[in-house]
Image (cartoon, rainbow, N blue to C red; front, side, top):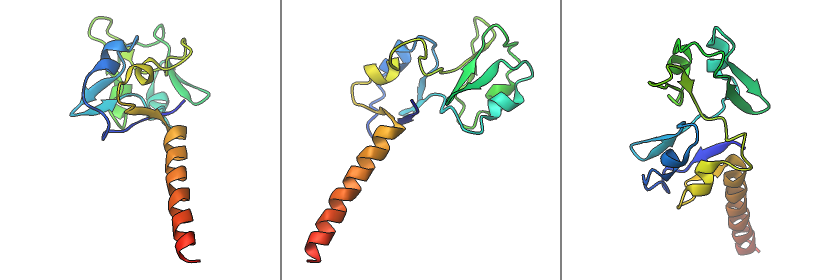
Amino acid sequence: MKIMPNIELCVDCGKCERSCPHNAIFIVEGIPIRCMHCESAPCVQVCPEDALKKVGDRIILDNDKCIGCSLCTEVCPIGAIRIDTSSGIATKCNDCMEFDSEICVDVCPTGALSSYTKIVEDKREDMLVKLKKLTSLNK
């Protein structure tokens, strides 16, 4: 599931950071930063060891293949990939693929982390309500 942070709802509590099993989300000036699993995925294209792969709509890191060269960190358009100082290899969000749901979304007390689908559905619903009001005024 693609997640979109809503910076208006983020209260910078850090629950998503503390709860992430991969230490792959962090907050910068009230903005939750996590891998957006880009369609073009420059990190996948630049990795010399094929440690990053596109699997469905996710970009997955194979820790065993990563050599810690940091090329992926340099090309990530939002800075969501980091080199772990203890292991020396890259770390990034994998959408909690080993769990039934995404931990950061589950623990967020304000709903600042939502799926693209939910955001689009909410916007669509708002637009439909506005259109209905407009059309009723024109009758």
